[in-house]
Length: 278
Image 1 (cartoon, one colour):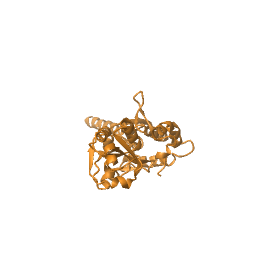
Image 2 (cartoon, helix red, strand yellow):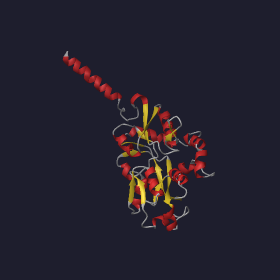
Image 3 (cartoon, helix red, strand yellow):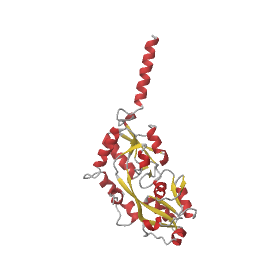
Image 4 (cartoon, one colour):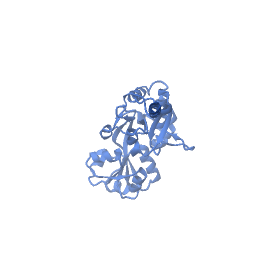
């Protein structure tokens, strides 16, 4: 009798654990959900609406993937620096969070093919820009030539890795707001980051900042899954391959976010700024 009870308890425990884990390829999740990690403080890609619900371009992309897989979307909001750890520990199934594909990250996760390309520009302190003759139209070579530039970046992001690639020491900040404050106060000279962040920061601080408009880097953006999760990786790549089909997700994004994109980048701007590599 005791042996029977032990067997039953062991079976119940195994079934309980299986319900909380992904099946072989990781694509079928607990209760049929696709848990997508993102940091909801980067509008118009990842943010909250007026009802405090996740919204934005990345949320729409994630919803399309969930629909394609026949799963319910669950957006898990967390600090950007925690996303890879959340993948490794199984807290989330996939990252769809404007994450740049880098060699360092590829050592920890598996990336899909790129689905966006971010043109990385700069936010400059105005006094620094004036002192060094830098304007919004300066070339990347002009910026890299200023050897004593004090770069600031957000820990774990390409705002740190890009200047380091050119031999600069980079002050690391915990978040974008703190980094922007350092620029406006003149305690740092340049923050390299995505255009929407730069434009918003400049609009909030027009007297103390200058936008460096020419692309300092073109960063491929991919979805990330845990290493070895081949089934979900393949499914996500299939989804990405068909984003541009007639009446597809890209077309929906072009229409839905046209006004937002033009408000930020001018009347000729479209979502193709992010969709196309060049």
